[in-house]
Image 1 (cartoon, rainbow, N blue to C red):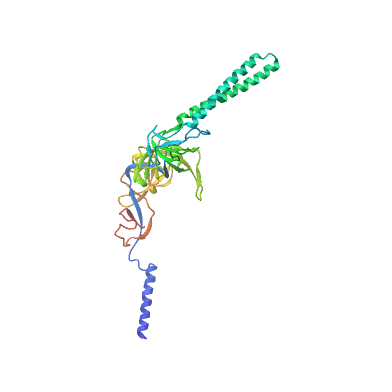
Image 2: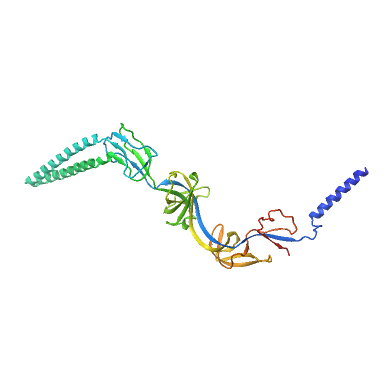
Length: 371
Protein backbone atom coordinates (compact mmCIF):
# COMPACT_ATOMS: atom_id res chain seq x y z
CA UNK A 1 0.00 0.00 0.00
CA UNK A 2 2.85 2.32 0.85
CA UNK A 3 4.51 1.71 -2.53
CA UNK A 4 1.24 2.46 -4.32
CA UNK A 5 0.97 5.80 -2.52
CA UNK A 6 4.57 6.69 -3.42
CA UNK A 7 3.92 5.84 -7.07
CA UNK A 8 0.82 8.04 -7.21
CA UNK A 9 2.69 10.93 -5.59
CA UNK A 10 5.52 10.58 -8.11
CA UNK A 11 3.13 10.69 -11.05
CA UNK A 12 1.47 13.79 -9.67
CA UNK A 13 4.88 15.52 -9.32
CA UNK A 14 5.89 14.70 -12.94
CA UNK A 15 2.52 15.87 -14.30
CA UNK A 16 2.75 19.08 -12.33
CA UNK A 17 6.22 19.78 -13.69
CA UNK A 18 5.04 19.25 -17.25
CA UNK A 19 2.15 21.64 -16.75
CA UNK A 20 4.49 24.20 -15.26
CA UNK A 21 6.82 24.02 -18.25
CA UNK A 22 3.93 24.37 -20.70
CA UNK A 23 2.78 27.47 -18.82
CA UNK A 24 6.24 29.03 -19.00
CA UNK A 25 7.21 28.50 -15.37
CA UNK A 26 10.67 27.24 -16.52
CA UNK A 27 12.00 29.44 -19.33
CA UNK A 28 15.64 28.80 -18.66
CA UNK A 29 16.57 32.33 -19.67
CA UNK A 30 15.44 31.96 -23.31
CA UNK A 31 14.14 34.87 -25.40
CA UNK A 32 11.82 35.03 -28.38
CA UNK A 33 13.31 35.72 -31.85
CA UNK A 34 11.91 36.21 -35.38
CA UNK A 35 13.35 34.25 -38.28
CA UNK A 36 13.16 35.56 -41.87
CA UNK A 37 13.96 34.00 -45.24
CA UNK A 38 16.26 36.29 -47.24
CA UNK A 39 17.87 36.58 -50.67
CA UNK A 40 20.61 38.72 -52.16
CA UNK A 41 19.99 41.24 -54.92
CA UNK A 42 21.88 40.11 -58.03
CA UNK A 43 22.69 41.42 -61.50
CA UNK A 44 20.84 39.28 -64.01
CA UNK A 45 18.33 39.29 -66.88
CA UNK A 46 14.63 39.60 -66.06
CA UNK A 47 12.38 38.03 -68.68
CA UNK A 48 8.60 37.94 -68.76
CA UNK A 49 6.96 35.10 -70.66
CA UNK A 50 3.52 33.89 -71.68
CA UNK A 51 3.19 30.11 -71.60
CA UNK A 52 0.64 27.88 -73.27
CA UNK A 53 0.20 24.44 -74.80
CA UNK A 54 -0.49 23.80 -78.46
CA UNK A 55 -0.38 21.41 -81.37
CA UNK A 56 1.99 21.12 -84.34
CA UNK A 57 0.23 21.53 -87.70
CA UNK A 58 1.10 22.20 -91.33
CA UNK A 59 0.81 25.81 -92.43
CA UNK A 60 -1.35 24.75 -95.41
CA UNK A 61 -3.11 21.65 -96.71
CA UNK A 62 -4.52 20.84 -100.15
CA UNK A 63 -7.24 18.41 -101.25
CA UNK A 64 -6.50 17.62 -104.90
CA UNK A 65 -9.24 16.38 -107.22
CA UNK A 66 -9.42 15.28 -110.84
CA UNK A 67 -11.41 17.83 -112.82
CA UNK A 68 -13.21 20.84 -111.43
CA UNK A 69 -15.86 21.00 -108.73
CA UNK A 70 -19.34 20.31 -110.06
CA UNK A 71 -18.16 18.80 -113.36
CA UNK A 72 -19.80 15.55 -114.54
CA UNK A 73 -16.72 14.05 -116.15
CA UNK A 74 -15.69 10.48 -115.35
CA UNK A 75 -11.97 10.10 -114.57
CA UNK A 76 -10.62 6.52 -114.85
CA UNK A 77 -7.44 6.48 -112.75
CA UNK A 78 -4.46 5.10 -114.70
CA UNK A 79 -1.66 5.54 -112.13
CA UNK A 80 -1.16 6.40 -108.45
CA UNK A 81 2.47 7.31 -107.79
CA UNK A 82 2.37 7.99 -104.03
CA UNK A 83 1.08 6.59 -100.77
CA UNK A 84 0.21 8.10 -97.40
CA UNK A 85 3.31 9.35 -95.60
CA UNK A 86 5.41 9.95 -98.72
CA UNK A 87 7.36 13.19 -98.82
CA UNK A 88 6.87 14.95 -102.15
CA UNK A 89 8.42 17.88 -103.96
CA UNK A 90 6.66 20.80 -105.57
CA UNK A 91 5.21 19.86 -109.03
CA UNK A 92 5.85 16.14 -108.48
CA UNK A 93 3.25 13.93 -110.24
CA UNK A 94 0.99 12.21 -107.72
CA UNK A 95 -1.62 10.47 -109.89
CA UNK A 96 -2.98 10.46 -113.46
CA UNK A 97 -6.31 9.66 -115.10
CA UNK A 98 -7.54 8.99 -118.64
CA UNK A 99 -9.41 11.74 -120.51
CA UNK A 100 -11.62 9.53 -122.68
CA UNK A 101 -14.89 10.83 -121.25
CA UNK A 102 -13.60 14.39 -121.18
CA UNK A 103 -12.62 14.36 -124.86
CA UNK A 104 -16.05 12.99 -125.79
CA UNK A 105 -17.72 15.81 -123.90
CA UNK A 106 -15.41 18.36 -125.51
CA UNK A 107 -16.39 17.07 -128.95
CA UNK A 108 -20.09 17.40 -128.11
CA UNK A 109 -19.53 20.87 -126.70
CA UNK A 110 -17.81 21.97 -129.91
CA UNK A 111 -20.82 20.86 -131.95
CA UNK A 112 -23.12 22.71 -129.57
CA UNK A 113 -21.00 25.85 -129.84
CA UNK A 114 -20.94 25.59 -133.66
CA UNK A 115 -24.71 25.19 -133.76
CA UNK A 116 -25.15 28.20 -131.48
CA UNK A 117 -22.91 30.25 -133.77
CA UNK A 118 -25.02 29.32 -136.81
CA UNK A 119 -28.24 30.16 -135.00
CA UNK A 120 -26.80 33.51 -133.99
CA UNK A 121 -26.02 34.34 -137.62
CA UNK A 122 -29.53 33.36 -138.65
CA UNK A 123 -31.02 35.53 -135.90
CA UNK A 124 -28.92 38.46 -137.06
CA UNK A 125 -30.06 37.95 -140.65
CA UNK A 126 -33.70 37.80 -139.50
CA UNK A 127 -33.29 41.12 -137.73
CA UNK A 128 -31.63 42.68 -140.75
CA UNK A 129 -34.49 41.50 -143.02
CA UNK A 130 -37.33 42.62 -140.71
CA UNK A 131 -39.44 45.41 -142.24
CA UNK A 132 -42.30 45.87 -139.81
CA UNK A 133 -42.34 46.87 -136.18
CA UNK A 134 -43.66 43.50 -135.02
CA UNK A 135 -41.17 41.59 -137.15
CA UNK A 136 -38.31 43.72 -135.84
CA UNK A 137 -39.42 43.18 -132.23
CA UNK A 138 -39.59 39.40 -132.69
CA UNK A 139 -36.26 39.35 -134.51
CA UNK A 140 -34.60 41.21 -131.67
CA UNK A 141 -35.92 38.70 -129.12
CA UNK A 142 -34.62 35.87 -131.30
CA UNK A 143 -31.24 37.59 -131.58
CA UNK A 144 -30.95 38.08 -127.81
CA UNK A 145 -31.79 34.42 -127.20
CA UNK A 146 -29.25 33.30 -129.80
CA UNK A 147 -26.55 35.48 -128.25
CA UNK A 148 -27.22 33.99 -124.80
CA UNK A 149 -27.13 30.45 -126.21
CA UNK A 150 -23.85 31.16 -127.99
CA UNK A 151 -22.33 32.50 -124.75
CA UNK A 152 -23.44 29.46 -122.79
CA UNK A 153 -22.08 27.07 -125.41
CA UNK A 154 -18.72 28.82 -125.62
CA UNK A 155 -18.41 28.90 -121.82
CA UNK A 156 -19.23 25.20 -121.50
CA UNK A 157 -16.65 24.33 -124.16
CA UNK A 158 -13.97 26.49 -122.50
CA UNK A 159 -14.66 24.92 -119.08
CA UNK A 160 -14.24 21.41 -120.48
CA UNK A 161 -11.04 22.26 -122.32
CA UNK A 162 -9.65 23.83 -119.10
CA UNK A 163 -10.03 20.49 -117.36
CA UNK A 164 -7.52 18.69 -119.57
CA UNK A 165 -4.54 19.58 -117.32
CA UNK A 166 -6.53 18.35 -114.31
CA UNK A 167 -6.11 14.76 -115.46
CA UNK A 168 -2.64 14.92 -113.88
CA UNK A 169 -2.41 15.70 -110.16
CA UNK A 170 0.83 17.39 -109.09
CA UNK A 171 1.94 18.54 -105.65
CA UNK A 172 1.47 22.29 -105.11
CA UNK A 173 4.33 22.40 -102.59
CA UNK A 174 7.08 20.50 -100.85
CA UNK A 175 5.19 18.44 -98.32
CA UNK A 176 3.86 15.11 -97.21
CA UNK A 177 0.98 13.01 -98.54
CA UNK A 178 -1.71 12.75 -95.85
CA UNK A 179 -4.46 10.87 -97.73
CA UNK A 180 -4.92 8.83 -100.93
CA UNK A 181 -8.51 8.02 -101.95
CA UNK A 182 -7.88 6.54 -105.44
CA UNK A 183 -6.37 3.44 -106.99
CA UNK A 184 -5.37 2.56 -110.52
CA UNK A 185 -8.14 0.92 -112.53
CA UNK A 186 -11.00 2.61 -110.70
CA UNK A 187 -12.87 5.82 -111.37
CA UNK A 188 -11.81 8.76 -109.22
CA UNK A 189 -14.28 9.97 -106.57
CA UNK A 190 -16.04 13.30 -106.91
CA UNK A 191 -14.10 14.67 -103.91
CA UNK A 192 -10.43 14.72 -103.02
CA UNK A 193 -8.25 12.09 -104.65
CA UNK A 194 -4.97 12.95 -102.91
CA UNK A 195 -4.34 15.27 -99.94
CA UNK A 196 -1.01 16.99 -99.33
CA UNK A 197 0.18 18.97 -96.29
CA UNK A 198 2.89 21.58 -96.51
CA UNK A 199 6.32 20.71 -95.12
CA UNK A 200 6.27 24.08 -93.38
CA UNK A 201 5.04 23.51 -89.83
CA UNK A 202 3.58 25.81 -87.22
CA UNK A 203 2.20 25.53 -83.73
CA UNK A 204 -1.36 26.54 -83.03
CA UNK A 205 -2.09 27.42 -79.42
CA UNK A 206 -4.62 29.31 -77.30
CA UNK A 207 -3.63 32.22 -75.08
CA UNK A 208 -5.87 33.32 -72.22
CA UNK A 209 -7.39 36.79 -72.49
CA UNK A 210 -5.28 38.26 -69.67
CA UNK A 211 -2.08 37.42 -71.57
CA UNK A 212 -3.18 38.49 -75.07
CA UNK A 213 -2.32 42.21 -74.56
CA UNK A 214 1.28 41.19 -73.80
CA UNK A 215 1.93 39.44 -77.11
CA UNK A 216 2.36 40.82 -80.63
CA UNK A 217 3.21 39.54 -84.09
CA UNK A 218 6.94 39.06 -84.53
CA UNK A 219 7.76 38.16 -80.93
CA UNK A 220 10.10 35.22 -80.44
CA UNK A 221 8.85 31.99 -78.97
CA UNK A 222 10.41 28.80 -77.66
CA UNK A 223 8.58 25.57 -78.51
CA UNK A 224 9.29 22.34 -76.64
CA UNK A 225 8.10 19.08 -78.22
CA UNK A 226 8.49 16.26 -75.73
CA UNK A 227 7.67 13.54 -78.25
CA UNK A 228 10.96 14.14 -80.08
CA UNK A 229 12.79 15.71 -77.10
CA UNK A 230 13.37 18.91 -79.07
CA UNK A 231 13.39 22.60 -78.18
CA UNK A 232 12.65 24.74 -81.24
CA UNK A 233 12.59 28.44 -81.98
CA UNK A 234 9.69 30.22 -83.62
CA UNK A 235 7.92 33.52 -84.19
CA UNK A 236 4.40 34.70 -83.46
CA UNK A 237 2.73 34.84 -86.90
CA UNK A 238 -0.95 35.54 -86.21
CA UNK A 239 -3.21 36.46 -83.30
CA UNK A 240 -6.92 35.83 -83.73
CA UNK A 241 -8.98 39.05 -83.53
CA UNK A 242 -11.87 37.25 -81.83
CA UNK A 243 -12.03 34.79 -78.95
CA UNK A 244 -11.95 31.12 -79.81
CA UNK A 245 -13.46 29.61 -76.67
CA UNK A 246 -14.53 30.02 -73.08
CA UNK A 247 -13.86 26.92 -71.04
CA UNK A 248 -13.63 25.69 -67.48
CA UNK A 249 -15.72 26.51 -64.45
CA UNK A 250 -14.62 30.15 -64.61
CA UNK A 251 -15.35 30.49 -68.32
CA UNK A 252 -11.79 31.59 -69.21
CA UNK A 253 -11.70 33.19 -72.67
CA UNK A 254 -8.79 32.39 -75.00
CA UNK A 255 -7.51 33.51 -78.40
CA UNK A 256 -5.88 31.37 -81.09
CA UNK A 257 -2.23 32.16 -81.81
CA UNK A 258 -0.11 30.68 -84.60
CA UNK A 259 3.67 30.35 -84.28
CA UNK A 260 5.86 29.58 -87.30
CA UNK A 261 8.86 27.35 -86.63
CA UNK A 262 12.44 27.99 -87.69
CA UNK A 263 13.91 24.96 -89.52
CA UNK A 264 11.81 22.21 -87.88
CA UNK A 265 13.51 18.78 -87.83
CA UNK A 266 12.29 15.96 -90.08
CA UNK A 267 11.21 14.00 -87.01
CA UNK A 268 8.59 16.64 -86.21
CA UNK A 269 5.09 15.58 -87.22
CA UNK A 270 1.77 17.34 -87.54
CA UNK A 271 -0.43 16.61 -84.53
CA UNK A 272 2.36 16.46 -81.94
CA UNK A 273 1.80 18.31 -78.65
CA UNK A 274 3.98 21.31 -77.84
CA UNK A 275 4.68 23.61 -74.89
CA UNK A 276 5.01 27.24 -75.94
CA UNK A 277 6.81 30.09 -74.20
CA UNK A 278 6.55 33.57 -75.75
CA UNK A 279 9.02 36.20 -74.55
CA UNK A 280 7.01 39.39 -74.00
CA UNK A 281 9.55 41.64 -72.24
CA UNK A 282 13.22 41.53 -71.23
CA UNK A 283 15.42 43.69 -69.01
CA UNK A 284 19.08 42.72 -69.46
CA UNK A 285 21.85 42.95 -66.85
CA UNK A 286 19.79 44.67 -64.18
CA UNK A 287 19.66 44.46 -60.39
CA UNK A 288 16.90 42.01 -59.50
CA UNK A 289 15.35 40.41 -56.45
CA UNK A 290 12.63 37.78 -55.98
CA UNK A 291 9.23 39.36 -56.67
CA UNK A 292 7.89 38.09 -53.35
CA UNK A 293 10.25 40.51 -51.57
CA UNK A 294 8.22 43.50 -52.78
CA UNK A 295 5.61 45.14 -50.60
CA UNK A 296 3.12 47.71 -51.85
CA UNK A 297 1.84 48.42 -55.36
CA UNK A 298 3.07 49.93 -58.63
CA UNK A 299 4.76 53.26 -57.98
CA UNK A 300 4.96 52.70 -54.22
CA UNK A 301 7.06 49.59 -53.62
CA UNK A 302 9.22 48.92 -50.56
CA UNK A 303 11.53 46.12 -49.48
CA UNK A 304 12.94 45.07 -46.11
CA UNK A 305 16.73 45.23 -46.22
CA UNK A 306 18.91 43.21 -43.85
CA UNK A 307 22.00 45.03 -42.55
CA UNK A 308 25.30 43.34 -41.70
CA UNK A 309 24.44 43.44 -37.99
CA UNK A 310 21.16 41.63 -38.63
CA UNK A 311 18.87 44.63 -38.22
CA UNK A 312 16.10 45.11 -40.75
CA UNK A 313 14.98 48.42 -42.28
CA UNK A 314 12.21 49.21 -44.76
CA UNK A 315 13.40 50.98 -47.90
CA UNK A 316 11.55 52.46 -50.88
CA UNK A 317 12.63 51.16 -54.29
CA UNK A 318 11.90 52.03 -57.90
CA UNK A 319 10.76 48.95 -59.82
CA UNK A 320 10.88 48.20 -63.53
CA UNK A 321 9.87 44.87 -65.08
CA UNK A 322 8.10 42.55 -62.63
CA UNK A 323 7.46 38.89 -63.40
CA UNK A 324 6.08 36.02 -61.36
CA UNK A 325 9.59 35.23 -60.09
CA UNK A 326 11.84 38.30 -60.40
CA UNK A 327 11.55 42.07 -60.09
CA UNK A 328 13.88 44.60 -61.72
CA UNK A 329 15.15 47.20 -59.23
CA UNK A 330 15.96 50.51 -60.95
CA UNK A 331 16.96 52.41 -57.81
CA UNK A 332 17.00 52.06 -54.02
CA UNK A 333 18.97 48.82 -53.81
CA UNK A 334 22.39 47.61 -54.88
CA UNK A 335 23.58 44.20 -55.97
CA UNK A 336 24.73 42.15 -52.97
CA UNK A 337 22.33 43.63 -50.45
CA UNK A 338 20.01 41.12 -48.82
CA UNK A 339 16.26 41.51 -48.63
CA UNK A 340 13.56 39.66 -46.73
CA UNK A 341 11.63 37.36 -49.07
CA UNK A 342 9.61 35.10 -46.81
CA UNK A 343 7.07 35.27 -44.04
CA UNK A 344 8.35 35.44 -40.46
CA UNK A 345 7.77 32.94 -37.64
CA UNK A 346 8.36 33.41 -33.92
CA UNK A 347 10.34 30.74 -32.13
CA UNK A 348 12.68 30.37 -29.13
CA UNK A 349 16.16 31.72 -29.85
CA UNK A 350 17.81 28.65 -28.36
CA UNK A 351 15.55 26.16 -30.20
CA UNK A 352 17.56 23.25 -31.61
CA UNK A 353 17.86 23.53 -35.41
CA UNK A 354 18.28 20.81 -38.00
CA UNK A 355 21.39 20.23 -40.11
CA UNK A 356 19.69 22.07 -43.02
CA UNK A 357 20.33 25.57 -41.71
CA UNK A 358 17.34 26.30 -39.51
CA UNK A 359 13.67 26.85 -40.16
CA UNK A 360 13.98 27.90 -43.85
CA UNK A 361 17.15 25.91 -44.57
CA UNK A 362 20.07 26.63 -46.87
CA UNK A 363 21.63 29.32 -44.66
CA UNK A 364 19.28 31.91 -46.19
CA UNK A 365 17.70 33.00 -42.92
CA UNK A 366 18.33 35.80 -40.51
CA UNK A 367 17.37 35.79 -36.83
CA UNK A 368 16.34 39.04 -35.19
CA UNK A 369 16.22 38.86 -31.32
CA UNK A 370 12.96 39.81 -29.71
CA UNK A 371 12.69 42.98 -27.71
